[in-house]
Length: 484
Image 1 (cartoon, rainbow, N blue to C red):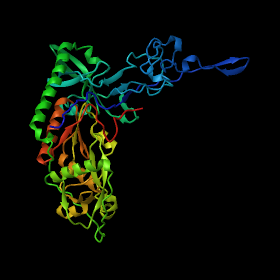
Image 2 (image 1 turned 180 degrees about the vertical axis):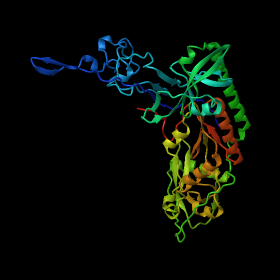
Image 3 (image 1 turned 90 degrees about the horizontal axis):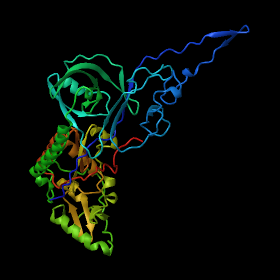
Image 4 (image 1 turned 90 degrees about the vertical axis):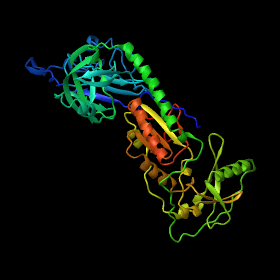
């Protein structure tokens, strides 16, 4: 059995959102004219017209600012707020959804009077920790929400609102969402709902926002009214982890054949190499192999032949020399150097490969991640009978013809990507990049259900030798996506 090292990633990729609270700007102060010695001299503006360097507001001087004792969330120093901090933002690997209220116009804003001016809405999940969820009853309908003591307000995503609370009328609100890149997100409005939790009942405000891939967040405005049973929440969180691990083991046992050492054979699809008509065959002699590698090359050729990947032939019009690639586990991979034979002569299959942006977008909103690696993926795909002659290689042991898709063929990536996309189409939260299948979910239950669907599809199409990734997802050579 291949190693099954499954790790759940608690927390999703960094996504920073900013909320602006629209507020009417107070008009500029009027300054009258004073007559002295028969001349009109305009009075100079008072210090209240300039913004305070501690909070960014006007109408007071810095020494009288009520925030002079506050600690900055950016630099950690006492004496100013983060929105006026001059230090560079801290770089953090902690997945964070940040929402902060701000005024639209600092220049004309009057003295700070609203005690909620500095409201913040945060959804912070540390790596290696599960979010704490609680189920509350909203208008007689149960809803699982993520508890966030750093969130000033409770936010319900539009999708959840439409499915469960569309009957609740919404009133306009002054809140405006902005992403860290400045893109505005719509806020649908604010409604009033009846919330019940453990014999507690209250009428509370509910903000509905057009955010995708985010769970409902239970913020401080609800926590001030509802007294949560934290002991049961902590126990439930631990129980959820154990249940998820148990369910994962069950799924893997149900699909144990996918993790065997035997090479699978993809059904319903075959690779076809389109060589342009009139192309002259190209035959190259075998290249000399260093003595230190000859034994390893011979062993690998024997293995490929035993598994039916290649077959020995006595004659061929086409023949490519081999290239020996040493892998990270010190084993070798034999590839045909097809750039000197068929690659210049074939009509390369055109099919787009995902780029990093495509992958990040498809995994947005996920809190649990897993990667399946299909070992020897290309070689699980048979080649059309008429195309095999083009894939002949010339080695120290003679001529061999590939029966399965070979590394080094110009069309191979596009052919394989196209087939995998067809196999996995229709499964949300799944992205395939060649032999890597990335699976995510907003919670463990959704993630495991998607994993089950993926494994069923692979099983139905004969693919095997799947390996589950370790504690980090290395995607296209990248270790993640973080803002600067």
